[in-house]
Length: 148
Image (cartoon, rainbow, N blue to C red; front, side, top):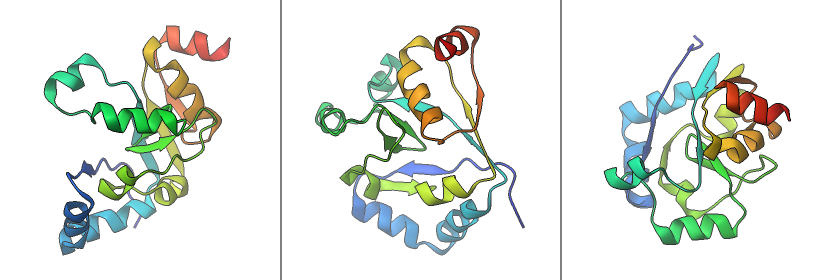
């Protein structure tokens, strides 16, 4: 049975914690379903966190961000980082993600990104260029910038 939409992801504090979560039978079963998506509804993040994320404590450290930038990362889809051409940027942070894999996302029949805002233009452009999303729901300013 194919799933229409699923939003499941966690960024664990360590690779060991993530592995323990993935080892839970219920979590493992839910993660296994992610390989059968009709539609993956995703957000597109950029490397520099918003002030809201920083205030909430839901952002990676300055050191982690610097390492991502050094590797050429410009954004993420489902906490999977990519460069300006939409190619994967693999880091140790990948081992902390409990969620859809790059392969599972690629297998989704439709990958719909819902995102906007001028600060995310580079990340959005790269996600579209790399085929990480094939449908984009965005604001007029972002659409105009991407078409320019």
